[in-house]
Length: 115
Image (tube, one colour):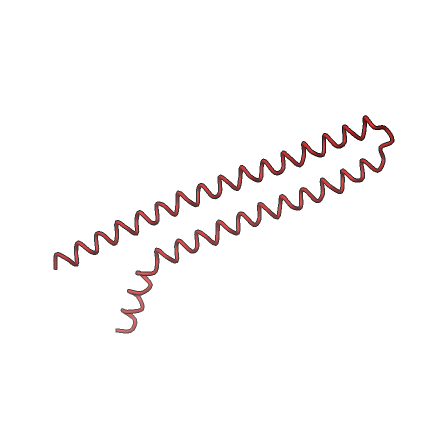
């Protein structure tokens, strides 16, 4: 009897655990993206400081500044786009899960009402 109750509880909680797992996976992916962006910005910054320390010409310094800012902008833009894609996919999956949970609940309610 205890095993049957335990199994029923697992089945009842499965949609919520699936949703929690989706959230965890999404957050892990976002953390990886942010970490990658941070590492990239740090290495670009170090390279930039190395370049500007060697520049003696104002024009070359301006070009180094421009190249660095374009690189930073591209890195942040790429990270933002990929983060948006990740969140959008997670939102769609969560919507599908919630829709399925609603349909299962409605089906169980109807079958219980017909008894």
